[in-house]
Length: 391
Image 1 (cartoon, helix red, strand yellow):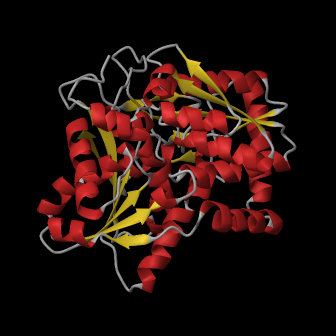
Image 2: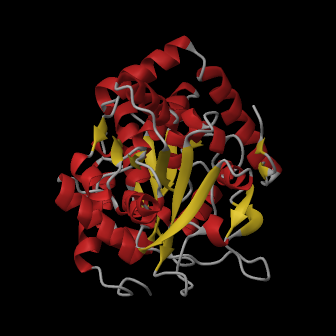
């Protein structure tokens, strides 16, 4: 298995961490092809998570945009987002490795919730690292994690958001690698984590491809939100070799192009090192990692998974930024047109339809990965006024 996607990826970590990463890699490479492990995971994905998730033809939205719009309904999984696919698989690996405790970082709380859920199911101790700002704006998910038995650490360093939570989770893991397994939530970090997360999230794209074939429908565009990039990597992966399918990742622009508050790494970032990987990073002229902030806690990350940096550079996928107003408008539109309340993260992908659809010269079929549901975001949506949430 490659440590890099082109020049992106790698292991930029101390030697003691490389030892732990080698242990994770060996377990992953062994178990991902192990018949018993695969059967157990597939059984849980079907009976516990609720897979396969539907590919839903959004007829009202299709009429609105004058193109055929389909939604891959990851919002219908147990815990309400795609994060459970990967969290459950990694927790199962941890148990096979005889680890007693799993840890995770989280922004919007969905990965933390998924990890806490998997820990409860498999009888593992669980500790979650979450920026104090995100703890406040995602209080419902924090309560759910605690209800499931997890300890939630509110990180008060930096901007108190996702990047700071990753820092603290890594620091904790370095000191406790013998007994602790780090369940990384997005397609980021040092090798082998980007490959592990992409592998377990690729079920989204595999299902989607089969579902499209069943209805004899060819797809022209696949659109997904990108923060670290797990849901986009998951749905893109099965279509990478089909060059007729155009892949679009959508980042968070925050208040817009004239503000320092954004998380549009591929739109504005430069090559650098963050959290043990070489990728595109938002940084200043001195190479210091920039602070990011978005209405979307789940997209609020100054880096990007190395697969996406590679897909952009190789021109296999294109990436665009959506601001907060556009995101909230798209969220409300889906509510009114289809009776579906999407997560703020997913709403960035939905918002790009406003730009994509009018530019198309012929009627096209577009699949949007609806990565999560919006229950966790209702307070933020209710309180939203441009600029109000920015500190």
